[in-house]
Length: 474
Image (cartoon, rainbow, N blue to C red; front, side, top):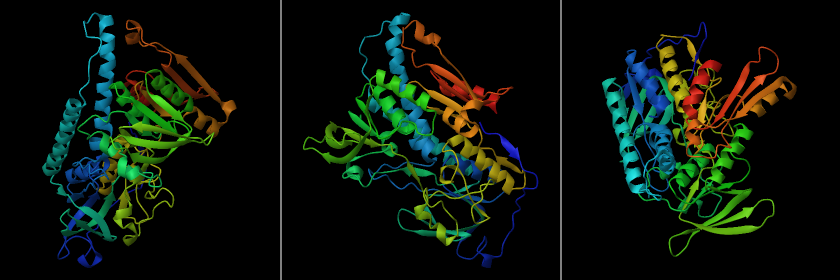
């Protein structure tokens, strides 16, 4: 749900430079109007839009296998190791809850219904592969040239792409868009973390059940994964160093984890792992420290999943060859309101850009709007304000706008009014489900007309509910 801001006077014109300037038409290399580095949601949207508007476009995309050897096709994080497989596995877990509800509604269902991980994983993976194929077909239909190569900058108009066999290709373009996204962070300072742990890059492509799982981290990725693992009947533990869902409304975050804990997910709070080792029977032994007491503890698990944040895919791009600046801490690419980097004809969109929400729909919209501006079709800029999001934990959490903490920090506590209510979803009544965490709140300015600053909803189908309210708030 992204609206556009009109920015009068912002126009981008295509300039066909001479070969000596490092653009298209030079001998020994292939030249394009637009080169997109990264075949994820934002990059593909930008490439297809520009091609539809008559430009000569190429997309380069290459997936470096995870440390566990997991690899996937075209489509980026969302399609392959993010939103799509996550939502499908979340749905599988929700169906388990519905099966338990079914006898209350008259369905004669056996009390213990087993879940087959292998069958679910195969179905999810087949759907993802069909999306990979669909993206390739769409690029072909739009006459976008696709290169499965790992790209790095030679200079500000040229990149060198290397295939997995080591063959090099030089590509030059008048305009370049970087849309390489990010990958999960590994805690390399922890012994055994890289050798024995997995991340969200791997969990959705496992052929066999992960079994008893320790999820380290308290991000939305951590809680979503732990949530669907518990829902599928697996033993899942979340190790939280500080606070869950940092950056989200903390009252809502507490209700999310309360619900998860009451439905079987274990939480180790204020703890941090120090070592992972493999036992003779193949299980993983994890040593961790309680930060408050300093005491060490040990547990055994079948799988350790790191969900401690993500890092942008910028290191291998050799951005310094093109003069593109990055943030000194995050390593994300610095951009202006028009997605331009420190080099005017090089742009960055999506997760790799500093200060942008790590969400697929804004990346898609930003990519389309950028292509329209580059083609002189529009001057609209992407509006990143009040972008809604949903956390697909067992009890879903949807929000749009400011958290209560952000509203107070921005406007002062005396200027903020919060309206809130617990409620019971109708579908919880017959099955006598616990609804003590189903909750909604609106964060408003106190002065009339009491502008709504943020809306937070915890309950079934939160994503669908939030989309409607997001339109009203927008």
